Structures are given as structure tokens and as C-alpha cells.
Image (cartoon, rainbow, N blue to C red; front, side, top):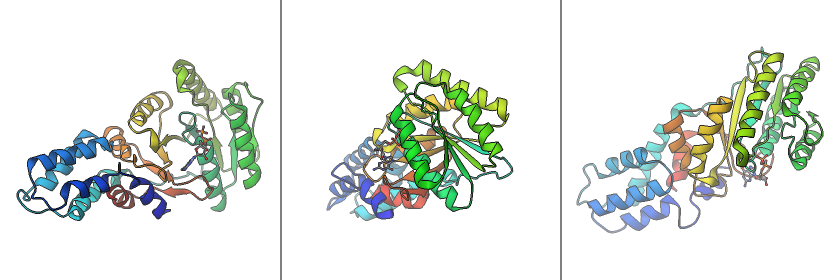
Length: 300
Ligand code: GDP
């Protein structure tokens, strides 16, 4: 997976690493090079504050010196690691909650359903009894997809026909999970950002109704972000954070993009824990987030 992450983030001419080599090869450091560096970092979505800090760190004491791109990469990797380290946190399951309810939110296509399948596989392997709830009741395909994951993993999937009320499903799912002694309930949700008001109402209602079953539910709200959307991810964190009280992040598709830098900007701004990264479509392609690996992969 490390290779996939590194290959993803350093892919193509748009990667930071390639840009650095272009700037820093065989020239003495001057102001123009530092400006180019800052541009590259901003274009890589790291955010202006971090881009400035890295540029300053590179410039310090190096004017008129030959600068090896490798040295710049090391500074970049270590700055990214520093920003992210406090937020690289595992998702802790409180086993006194039965079930521990995890609500999974995010826009359509971000990788919610796939991530739920991957998480269910991990948690089952760790010995938890996992149940799934097909809360994206708008799309028949989403319900089916979750049912397929359930069959594969041997987890019960609570589902209702397409178009059903997702909050009613949430209520029943907690009840069923409790009566069947499930440790964990992972609930999928719809992510129609096109209709923001409806989406917000629905999420609020799901949470309100869950609390009729368990006043502390959901115990975790995971926001799944697709790394390939770049700057848009900031809006998504803002919106879902406001409505659903996001407690942690999962960033998917880091195997296929050079745009993962947005995670740095998100962390600077929202200071949310990052639990996992998705590095492929298969069941095992979900990794605990590690700040140092991510820093190295970004630097290419
Ligand atoms: P949802 O609409 O948010 O539930 O998104 P899905 O789980 O249906 O995922 C949308 C697409 O992204 C599917 O084709 C998934 O296989 C794919 N996908 C999800 N996570 C990853 C990942 O980490 N890497 C890659 N390459 N594809 C992923």
C-alpha cells in the first residue's frame, strides 16, 4: 500500500516532487525560485500558511547556495509530518457501547460504501460483531452494494426499499443491532450535495432519531473525502462538520491522485482526526493514517 500511496501522490508532472526537481536543479537559490516553490505548494493544495512556512524554511540560510532538491523534499516531508502528526489518530471503539454506532457521511462517489465494507472487514477480523445499515436509501445501487459487502463478510445488513425514510432505518438498525448483540453498527448515508437543504435535514433527522434509541449515538461520525476533488474537500468538511458533527476523517483514492495535499490544508483549518486512508478498491486497501509516511509520499 505504501507504494500505491507514494506512486499515487507522486504521479504525473503535477506532483510536487517533479516540480521541485525542476526548480532546484543546478541553480543558486534566489527569490524567484522560492516564489516558484510556494506556487507549487499552493497548487498542490497544501494551503497558503503551510506553503509559506515550508518556503521560509527552505530559504533560511540558503540564499546563493546550490540547493539539492532532495534537501527541499526532506524539509517538505518533515513540515507535512509535523502538521499532521497530532491528528493521526486511530478510530477507537468504545466496547462499553453496544452497539458502538458509526455514521458514515460524505458526498456521493467519495467512497463511503466501499469504506464501510473495508472497515467492516477490519473490525470483524478484530473480533467485533459488525452490523451494517444501508442508509443511502435514495440509490438502489448503494443498497445493493452494501448488501454485497454484507454477504461477502458475513455481516447482517439492515436495509429497506429504495426511497424509504433513512431515519426510520437508523432507529430500527440500532434496535436490531442491540437485540442481536452487535458490537458495532456502521451506517451508510446519502450524499446528494446538489440538494443541500434536503441532505442537511436528512442527516439532522437521522442523528435526532438515533438519539431516541441511544442518547450518545452516533458515537463516531466519519466523513469520507475523495482526495481527487482537491479544494472542494474543504467545503465538504465545512458543510458536513456543521450538520453532522464530524468526529474524524477518511481520505480515499490516494492511490490515484497527486492531490492529497488538501489533507494538510484541511488539518490546518479544521483540526480533525484523520483515521484512515483509502489506497485502492479492494477490501484490504484501507490503512491507518500515518503522518510520516504521508509526508514522505507527498514529497515524492
Ligand atoms: P459512495 O457513493 O460514497 O458510497 O462511493 P462508493 O463506495 O460507491 O465508491 C465510489 C467509487 O470509488 C467506486 O468505484 C469505488 O470502488 C471507488 N473507491 C472507493 N475508495 C477508493 C480508493 O481508496 N481508491 C480507489 N482507487 N477507488 C476507490
